[in-house]
View (tube, rainbow, N blue to C red):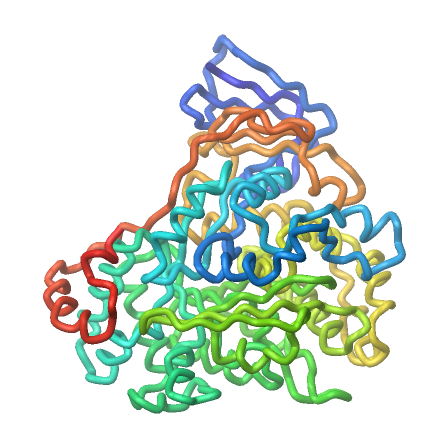
Length: 542
């Protein structure tokens, strides 16, 4: 069966800039985009006059499965009994913010609702960035239970006691590399994530902070050594995605120094800095808290091996969930509502769940909002920066259409900026940043760029051979309206969503890495595993 989408404007930056003339797109019965020879019989045709056609969206950093996601749901049942608008207090502009404050059943919806909400924004693939080895099975089961979306996970390493012990003992790099390869295969993940390298473990030994060159109280190693070792392992294994790093000192004024030290620690290797907005703060300004977005942006602009996702803050109720127990514990007094959960898991990592409400009248929150936008606007190459809110930490993912408008519409951006705390307005450079993202650049940040960063050759573009994950939007001068609800979504060439109606559940796949490593590492693991973990080595393999 051949499907033809005729007369739409195909937006695919991998094939050039936005076209001036409408084009046709074909998808074969194998669910793959094709260039059929003349005379090919078309089984179904969709006429797309005044519509824009692009590949399915890819969220490369969103918390959709695993233990802390469920803890957040358990902690806040009251937020799931009523519709939640993440930005209702943000503006009085009825044609601006309120046109995208669609109801969401709590800041962390269940699996079924997550898949539906993502699909009806035009997203077809999402990646859970914090799969704990001890909890990997549950994370994968939840991602599998999330309809419509292809999924994958990043394995959390860098705080498990076995690895720290080996680095402390100075075992050969090759042994660490084989360990990382075995762990990725055993837990079926696509990339490696580090959260506050060594800091989660150090917190358990009563350290309340651990900078990049500080020593761990027990193992006498530094986060720099952990980052260097793991980044080398990622390179040696040939993983498509670089080491995915949550830096030290999350949310701490002056943490730009530790962020820059983290970048230096990997010694020129590829690196992805995640939710970067939370890691580029200075200490100046009227409240001892200031933006260092320009410092990080300059670093990204001059280092093509670096990529970031922003983790944009937007105003309203959400819940912060993180394996960074050290800094979640530090922020416990800011919880709104005033209740929190902290948990240690095996000897691998931890978890902190702190509900939070970002208020536009508050200086720090307003500056965080501005810092994220500064990062977007100052980084020159959209292939190096990806659109995220670190769902749900900066805002629920349903905020993406609103965020896209902030990037594409300077006047709209300023209409919100003018409502912020007076000290934010007096100190932020945001008004001078008049760049407006083009549609091509939005597609790069939400589709082509994440696909390239993860090595997903069939996703993020519409060239022949690509997966038939196709989204059709009606052209609209308001980006919020356009991106809030597509006209049609195809998954593997099959129409699954049209004009607000879900037409059926699509095939799904899980993306995993397949690194080559020496299986002899299993002998070393068996010798040490039971010293640190209650869960047996064999039962941890998926």
